[in-house]
Image (cartoon, rainbow, N blue to C red; front, side, top):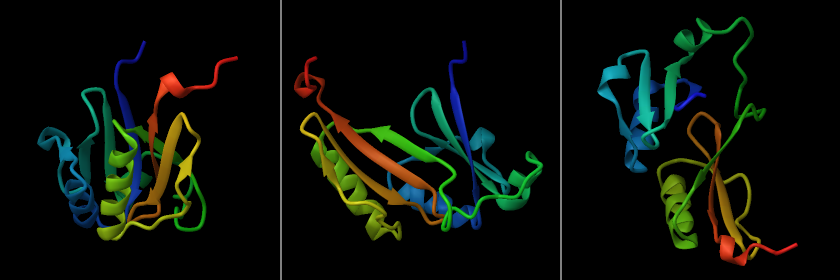
Amino acid sequence: MPSKVFINLPVQDLNRSKQFFQDLGFSFNPQFTDDKAGCMVVSDSIFVMLLTEAYFKSFIDTEICDAHRSTEVLIALDAGSADEVKGFISKAKSLGGTLYASAKDHGFMYQHSFADLDGHKWEMAYVDLSQFPQA
């Protein structure tokens, strides 16, 4: 079975996108980062490849989705607490990200959402399984 996840996202300005995510606290693996791609490290087994649009197109035979107009993917990440979700979303907004949905508190799960500079949609969620409704 696969042991790593690589999410590939097209970006209009690689340096600007890398700076946005570095400012959010992510690092980049220099081994897989150059002028066409940035390998953002989410965890030991999850990576987001930010690819220039020209480089991204070399992997596909269709058009690139305009993520500002259509949703091609929803990337969800976990957080250690509701406060961590709130802080992360607040920071994303202060760095130029946009909020596309309001925060939702489901009792056992707190989630909030933002779109990055290229319109890709991200969700942060804290799940407290001890509060999960029992059947």
